[in-house]
Image (cartoon, rainbow, N blue to C red):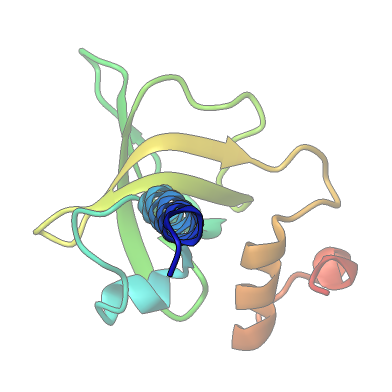
Length: 152
């Protein structure tokens, strides 16, 4: 094999290795930033990973909202009408947050099984429901009639 062919072969090998490393690092970074959606039933049955950022969605349980008098900490129940989890959040809730309405929270399940939210997202109008929440409620047979068209 000539010297020129050896140089080309090594250049191709290095190029392939470089692309493989770049793809591997990209996939690793994407895997770390994926926030999977879980319903309260999945969280209670421990299908959701503990201490890993996930999204949880459902309906806010009526009369479950409790606010701390000395801080911005709030707790409320989140249900898919099969199981209910407790959610803790420190911060200002969205203006559209209400009991009996659909929400999606981003956070982690702690060792006690409480969902500690970093962010709470509320629906933006009366007819909208987050698609994941609508699908979970439809599966449980408890989807409100006005939201029937949202679970597609």
